[in-house]
Length: 579
Image (tube, rainbow, N blue to C red):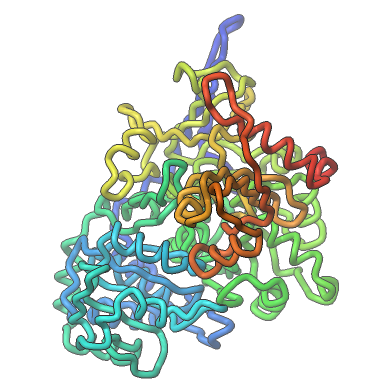
């Protein structure tokens, strides 16, 4: 099936007149003007017996009708607990059926789902729960080495002395209810089974009345993105934002109710919950979770056993899949399309995926959490060279312009500048952070992405760099200031600067340049141990360099690009840098 960008065009011009880096895309398909819960119910009515969800590691298979029963029960249970429209419900779990059920249940009652990274530790968890003002928290019992229940008990020891749903915590004053996905009893918490049974206390009519109160412009999701100015910022997204973005991302792949989409990317990211879950339910396709967290072998097995037609992943995932020793023993003939996104997509990797994994129609998506997330995408009819070397054209119903970062003026075609996007996909703002919102979204509602890009005469967009110092490690966006702020809390650290250097496996690795306080001593192992269990593992510096000074300008600004050059030379990474 061939799907193209409808009526996508750059600014027209006449002979001899300069053409500018602006493109918009109209579409013969209107935007979806409904809340997520209503669209979900419409899909169920259309495809009740289609498989909606396959969670391989849980051995769960649900048709759309069966998924709806679970979603409605969860929604009624949340209403029974007193959750109101606009209140925040945190979810802290790797990929699982309960994550999906919670996503659609909260959308039906208007509770705002707060995605919490499964890799977060106490330092980050406490901040997110406080900043979002979560009233409820749904969590897995544990994940890898993180014992979630114990971590929450450490933050809120009052759980041991309060009945479930009645928590009063000094550190987490808005949190009243904690629900864990296990089966055993935990003081002060509900387990998933008894929680779901509470749904019997609310009738279908009562839920329907609550659902009728939802509007598609209401906020429904908060996703935290690391910030260059300190702590993460909560990108607040509406039904309209994410439902439409999921719909058009899937449509540009040609996804239908006959497709099965393999989703090994995390649900707490837009990649999983929007491009994956919402992309599927807007077309009646099947969501397939191969494992709770990415594992290349489980992906290969799932593609073969479930006859998946679409596969999602960041470049490092596809690289790991093709590098698996058993790669050649699996059948990929069912694959037709997919998405590679999350970090720059190497041209050679794209070519290998198309050839070796039978994904002739794989697409590249470009965007950011704040834009729901996709602003540009390649399609199956994009010429090969543009498919592997660009991020495609502007998405339907959106606009893109490229401006001079210094002046804000649109630049000529082919000239690098900051990519800005406008349209239905731009977030409502950062949760309780109007200053950061005003910095990101200008008065004309253009979202300033911080990415440097060029646009050619046909409207194809090429990302050429980043204005900010963001590090992209294996698809995870890491902002140096956040790690710096944390390391400043170590009593022996006088100053610290974080930079990124090339890494053959993850794209980039984190380097810390550390100044130690006078009279203090600090080793690399001690600093890493300080990080362990308190910040996400991918933020822990791989390389640590102790120094007495930083390269600086005459005006006192630290020159991180010189630090990066020095680190690359000292670590012997020159060949990777030039590859």
